Length: 143
Image (cartoon, rainbow, N blue to C red; front, side, top):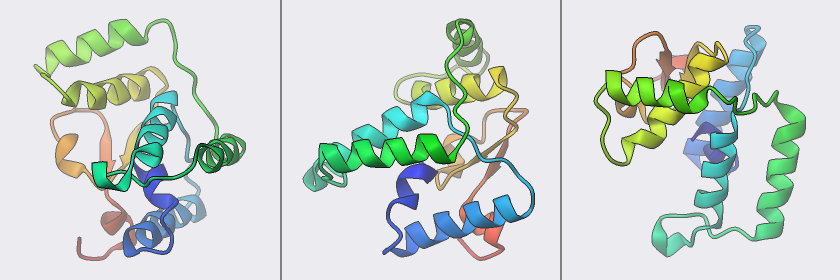
């Protein structure tokens, strides 16, 4: 979740996420959000460090979400999202936890979002018609 890593600017992963986003913006790309990104940010940010989260306070996460909503266009979920998601999971035979990723792909397709910036390239390689970019790709550096 690029937006999550953007919050970790004191770490290399956060600096790479921020650098990639800044480069994409400088090249004239529009960065945007769908609600699922905010949901995932909330979960990972408020989950304890012992459970692979960031252990942030609710107040801090609420402020971050508010700032994100002011900074990036938000494409709201559409009524057709369920049907698109069902089509994606059927087409790509998605099982288990990757169904969350399929929902993100469905939202992207419905909103004509053609690229995804992620550190988790392998989670999305099966999906056709969506460009999957890593911060390293954008920045032209080795993974």
